[in-house]
Image (cartoon, rainbow, N blue to C red):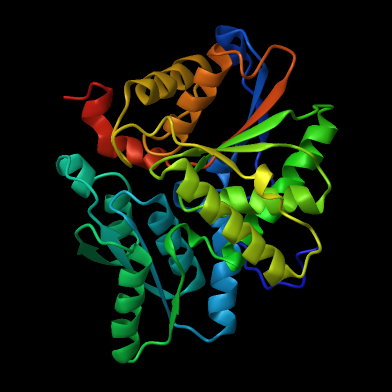
Length: 332
């Protein structure tokens, strides 16, 4: 799809690399694993939200906003990147962080939270809420009432506008795989706010590429997540005017790997993060990519993905959160 008709600001270092994880592939004895390094987008440590923010910030500026408002959990990678994008664009930003769980001082003050303050975001806090986006819209109303021209965007930047970033990424992956003579059998990605998986599905459908995408849930049930991904993908098709059809059967999520709750460590996540660090020098995060990789590893061990196949793992970033989970990985 030609995205030039949509306004965009330059925030990300693109294209991000597509790399072979040879040591991890040998260790697991299964398919050839490749990693799409969207942790290398460059903005304040990088991550997948930067692709979305290129379109969201552009729309905010086009509408004459002077203040961005968005939301996330305490250790939100999205909020960190949004604050960085606001700084780069010369905009003010106010964010609402939801305390979904209590851990320790590292979780409350280190990692992404420390960077949020360092980059000048105006940070508000709330306890668990029924709908964080609605709470964010209430904050946006207050900021607007104080005289600011606001642009609100939801958790994860997962609106049809933000999802454009992953239509673009799908085309990028296909082009890189073609250059490397790699035939992709499956793409695996962490799925939380749905925009990344939805954008990939739209981009692949637009390219007539029959590459399945598996979303590993980081906190929602399979049924709820599949419903939300499908809805966002269909809304994105309508927004863009594409003729691509998103088949409901193409939306596949797995809720077997997030453990007790969003953000809570699991033994499998710890193993996955440790394996990638020690075999590949590749840093994952405890909330998203660590759990998604644990799902990929489990499926390889179960024979779902086999030797001779090529699997692309989309690294959505988030390594800053490792510092908030210091004790999980043996820190004193």
